Image 1: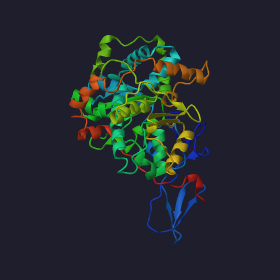
Image 2: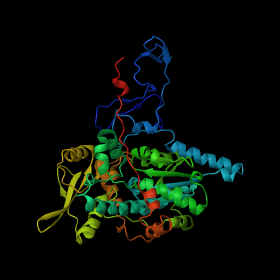
Image 3: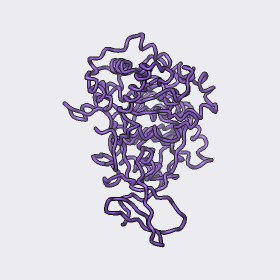
Image 4: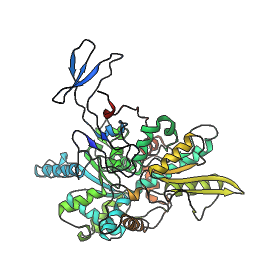
Length: 480
């Protein structure tokens, strides 16, 4: 698979594409000049020229496509397409590792980057299914693989999801309490899926954005942990750390590139590079090894994980992070004093649209839903825009079956995609489930790193904002 594109990004082979497949192209850079009018001509050699009313011509510069342009164009919407840019690929990851080796040989240790890799549990489960390994065995082998490449720290992102769940719970309860005073508070829509965020910002603008949870995704919270907390612990600057995440979704590359997650002070992103599950598979092939042939990381090497704890665990609920389950359980107890024992979902139009209701004395107290895939997302959005939504919270994920079935997960070879997905889900849910408030490491980090749960630093590190994207005409729609 190519790691970058040249003149145009080809958008094809999609399973949840909103509009007809086309080239995503930004051919020329046009500067707005008030009310002046002119026309654009293309010469025989393919150059672009702008002509003014006087007949003079000015050559236009060709604009380069960057990852941020994917958030600025209105030509396409994807949930998990392979838009790989050179700065967001395993080739770039290798380049940094090789640069470190050069600096070691030159005895320039102060110029080396501390390379950190954070792995999503969905990616671990996907690779485990391919090699018939348990979750923990897969995680330990991946640790050793990255250690041998020259990575200093390897973490599981579940620690970041803990923060995301806790803050989502708090945000929902706040929104519920003020819903009668302030419009646009409910339903609260989850915000961990970058494909869904991209769609909301580009297609529904300011109307939908107020309903989105303002809590960062686990990937970006992990970025804050690494570039702020870990940097402090190591007594180095954020830009001295090269942070790579392993994700089940190509759109996580878009998320990492957002300007909201960039520090001008240090010229550093919270997540420098995103590589996917299938890119890790390509890396294993490049190194000529199989994951099931790699030994697990030794206890000495794994001791590095003590920064954020060494246990592998999960949360009861969906394989996309269990947002719906965890917020429902918390809200039922916090708002109504109800202890929910069994979570019983009702399947609606399809398996990717489910709802759960808390009732008391015939009155509906809470109505939550899980909506995966753009077909279901569109239905949720349209009901909301018509004022007919009955939900208090919706866990929204762009991919059918959610993150566990992300477009960048390992592909099925000797089995059907459905059979592989079943194995991945089994491995993912094999971990012991834990309540998000039970992790002592998280509670300690709230105090030592964030200065308390309601501090200004907590807002800075764990929350973000969204931006309506001004629609522009696609290059293919220009009439020459």
